Each structure stands twice: as structure tokens, then as C-alpha cells.
Image (cartoon, rainbow, N blue to C red):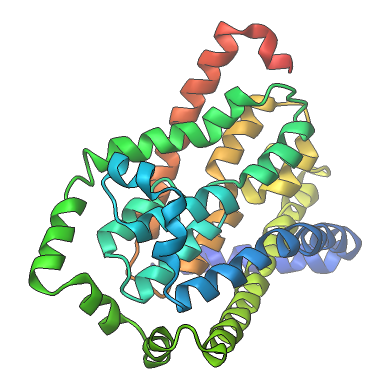
Length: 328
């Protein structure tokens, strides 16, 4: 333990020294992270964070999930709140899947097993980001094969997990309804203000109270996520100092958006796998979302690595079957 502390101390001293001795370069990397956060993350993610927070506080998640529940519920054998997390996780992207799962878990609206199950496959790059930024940047003109790799593979993996490692979720639900009742668990896990809001969920004051709380927590969260984007983009400074040039392969592993901008179209398979994994910045953001819950980050990392390997198999098979697709 002491050796680890010493190594971390040396690393951060060296990192601080790099920032001080290469101030112009450090400002460039930090500015890149700040620009990506301000121009990309805030407008794309903050509105969803606020709206989802209001719906959770007003106990509207089960109703919102009805758009997908008739299909997803029976297929995956899950409850409506689980469907809501799946919907938000796949539509909104990193780290919205983890944030919504953590919020519902904190309020007792999900069991720990359900939350861990959702983290295994529902925290991915958002489709708007993937289709409008990532694929054009990589020079990919075909869309459907890459959509299947990014979203179809995780959905199939989630279905497999539901009937193997997480087949006990259904048992937990029966036990919950038979002994205590899900409604009782949810009420016990909610703060007093939330229970008061659920009783008066049609009152304008309750809506404004939920909106106030959601805006405050969402702004605080978005600031934290932005700090991680700045930090991990700034870490590109270290290989630049040591080697005299940036290390493009490292970029996507640190922070995905800035890293893809370094690689552009040079290594499409590597970039696609980095998108599947998400990079260290996305891992840190996920930790920020779940750190106040009993959900496991190591479990999330394990399944994220498995999904990346599955995607590697899919993309390699696709490029071997269609060599021309490697170029488009």
C-alpha cells in the first residue's frame, strides 16, 4: 500500500511539473477538454439529466417506460423501472445509464441486483453522438453494421446475462412482493421530501420542488463530469513531454472525444473498440454517478471489457467478410 502511495505521489508531482514547465501546451489540452464539455456535453446531456431527475422525483418512471415495456418487459423479464433505465441508457449515452440507475437505486426503486445488471450493458455511447460525430469522423458511410456493434451486441449480451448470471432477478422480485412489497421498499428508501412529492404529484408546488432539486443536482453532476473531461484530456500532456510529440493511441483511452479527434480515420477498428470501452474518463464519470450507492464499479468494468471483446469479434468478422467495408 505504501509503495502504491509513493508511486502515485511521484506521478502527480511529475504531472504538476509538466503543467508548470509546459504551460502553453497544458492550456491547449485543458482548453480542449473545456471546449468539449461546454459545446458537447452540456447541451447534449444536461437537459436529459434535468428532465429525468424530475420524472424520478415525481414517480413517473414506470409510466414513461410504457413506450418500451410491452416488448422489453416480457423479453428481458424485468420490471418497468428497469425498462426506464434501459431506455435512458441507450438513448442518452454515457454516463446517463449509470446516473439513472444510481438515482433509482438510491430511492429504493431498484434492487441491487437489478442495478448491477443494468450497469453491465446499459451505459454506452449515445446514438446521436455515435451517428452524428463518431461515424463521420471515422469516415464510416455505412451505418447499420456499426449500430448493431454499438447497441445490438450490448442488447444481446444483456439478454444472455438475464438468463444466466442474473436469472435470479425474477426470484428477487417475487420474494420482494411476497414479503414486503415493492411499494414499501420504495417508500422506505425515499427521502421524506420525495414521499411528500409523490402524494402531491399533481400540485404545481410539487413540480417546482422536483424541478429545483433536479436542476441543482444535475448542474453539480455536470460540473463534476466536465472536470473529468478536462483532467483526462490534460493527461495527454505527459506523453507529449516524454516523447516530444503526442501519442494518438493513448488519446481515446483517456478521453474518447478528444482522442478520436487525434486519430481521425487512421485506425477505425481501434477507434470503434475505444468507443465500445468508453475510456478512463467515462469510467471515472460512471464512478462519480454510482459512488454513493452499493453498486460495484469493478462489476461494471468486468462487463465493459467483455462487451469490448465481443465487439472486437463482431467487427473483425464484419471486416473479414466485407473487406471493402473497412474503408467505408
